[in-house]
Length: 612
Image 1 (tube, rainbow, N blue to C red):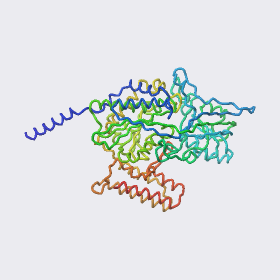
Image 2: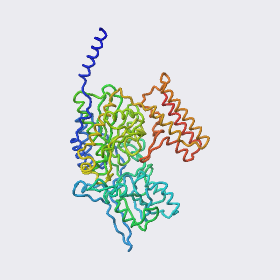
Image 3: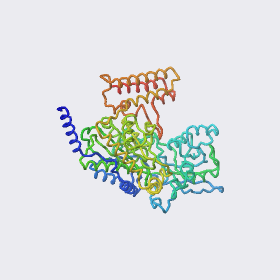
Image 4: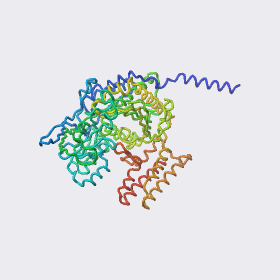
């Protein structure tokens, strides 16, 4: 009887404590109506990175964070983002004169936003200059296609202009390939078979790209400000010259519409080779530095203030940017509001939460990379996880990817939200703001969203009209995404939520090591040494005890970051990614034995660090 009474008293005390605890964030508190209002507020003006108009969205984000009870931080950087001040494309007619093509998109009366404030048809961080020559169709602009073109035509295309179809490869690599093979300029177009009339009704009657639509975008083959590689682009820091910067293309390029591509093709079949068209193109720029601004909101954790959960979405766009990335920014701001409502009830996250809206992502992950470069040391000590929201709600289909340490939290959130867990939760590829957190700071990352099809990517027609008429009437999918985000953030805010990717990383490492080439004795020995280290570390973690690593589990990947360098495990290029990049490059490039050994030893040292 005494035992039963004791248990009753303990149970009653626990119940009383729970009853007094303020309720945490409520995932059902998200508001579809408020999400729609947020989207339209964000899209009042274009959010072209560094423009005066974009400051309105920065101010709005700061207002939301402040109203939610967060400490607001505004972090400026001065970056090399040349503004296109002029562009032209002309074709030679049969009588020897030149006909200028209209490079701008055509809006429609049903959506007044499409009729104004167009960002020039441009590629971010392309080369300013002129080119004149025969047009050559080069397919998707892959290395194999250029190689085949050379086999068929020798060097006849040198000095020509490459007509490149979007798809299959990041646009910056397409232009870089054209440059490497001797072309003087490049024109990139989106084919109607990919996201135009072949897919369905085009705007304004359907969600697909009309024939005048173009895809803007960066052609920079690196991340961050080009002139401050490895350090933050604050106002008065030292800078390298543009000609010294890696990743910049050295030929001019322009995005054009499928209608203009058809004019250039003149009915020719889409096959590698010359087209009976001569053209000349020009790109003019103002290369003065541009100020960009990240806006962040911080809530200091009640129990683990030194452990940070970071939630980010890029705020900038190639115009009004409703899907890219008004969706992610809208969902992030709604999540912040729901978190703020819980704080007003007295709830506090046990870990510190940092909400971030990044600037200049569209130019090459610039805002997020500069912030990570500035705070890399602090992030390596404090950051537990980074959640990225980019194009978060454009349809009903849920998808997600994450590093091993966040598989458990993502799976748990899916189960609570009654969503099927994606079968493949692989490491996210390139092209968004999770990259610097993973590759420069070694942080576990996750990306998710609800997706559907449309043809407005980086177009002047990416406005709320598209969402409200076709992709997400009533903002129901946005509400799903925000509810999911609130649930996931709440889960990670608990100090008891483990972010442990060690075994997952090691399983992946062993699988990828099996795929490493071992054509020579040196390569075979290197592979065996790495497998031995990975297996030994796996056993030590499994067995636990005094021989197990003592470093926090969420810092596992940080062991594979040499000082001031990127990850030795995983590295992206454009939208793609690869394992063991330094070692693989040394093997594939048939580097000297010394270089191969240096790459091997760096990985072996990383395993030793991970085991401490």
